[in-house]
Length: 474
Image 1 (tube, helix red, strand yellow):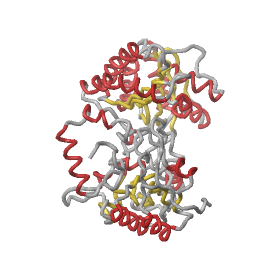
Image 2 (tube, helix red, strand yellow):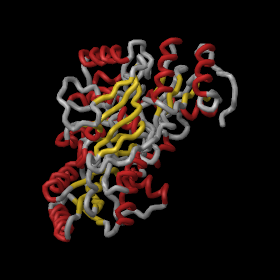
Image 3 (spheres, rainbow, N blue to C red):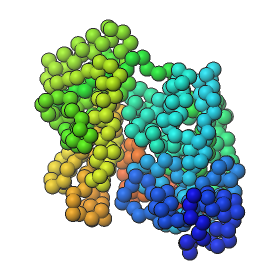
Image 4 (cartoon, rainbow, N blue to C red):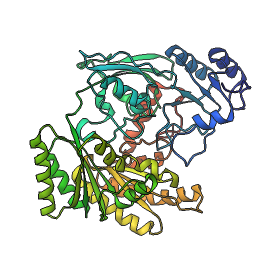
């Protein structure tokens, strides 16, 4: 139980604090320093948390009451899920109240006939996946943080992950939403319908909105059949163009579930940190991880023949294929453990994308900038190359302050994002804009689009209550 102490913030009106205590009690209105630090930040480490308090509602009605009080007293709210974001979208850095959904985790029984599930926004992604699996179905949006991320946050950031090449983004699996807007109004959007051509679909405005329009409180998700006998190959590759040749070959010959890549430094960091045996004795500049359905022995034979053909063409230097589920999971660790492993170096992350066919050109352009500006720093590459998404991670060296490191990297980002813009790409493929990338938004969105975004926010949140200062300045 949190300390029962008065609100310690001059930025929160005393009358509002009293009303929140009456609504939630001291147990669900937290103001102790540990809670403020814990709930006030996400995985971002370039902004210091400074919330006024943390709110833990149990119901939609309580959320509406909180928004009503925020409007009355001029307070600001930061919606909070699992806080696994990497762009500062869940940071409360200016005296806002953190609105945590962690107590709203109900998952309704699986609708087997409709192949769907309805859950509260605080439900953990992995628990939704497990509930679907118990009924022989699958929620396919998956990523390394699925064990702690919440579905409301996934939807608010339109999360992608490791199987976008097969299953698409979160947006493709949301059939209904309940949201509370900045006027405290509850909207029920699309009601889980597969077909509904009755005008504008506001559901898609909230998907990927990063909490600036209101807060997602409930979602209905579509489910699908799990893949048959998934197998994993890890391939040692000498160059990015060769990697793209392998991707094209795999897509024509295999039932591909995922196509990931990572650099040798990424592999080195993971294997050293977790005492994992490297897949090969020799080291290569890049590695591809390919997951595919092995529906029959013929499919496995076809995979082996594909590898042989790629080796004969000089695209692949070495390869390993999982023989059982344990080996499949072990090979996936080489890719999925990268982000967690490098977190100790406070990486400056650039999550960029372009079309799949332009990915080699983007990597080449960015590599040239890295060679020019980061000769003294470690650079870790990985990403979802099968959908054109590259993750560039610059690792902070010891002895350099976080502030100085961030400023140096931001200066380079302007050049990097120009390269992205020249290819018609995105400065944020899946992490969102949040606080860290809003000053660079114009590289992916023109002023007309940004102006329309401001207008849409004003319609749903006229008093600017939700997630102020995120994505764009009002």
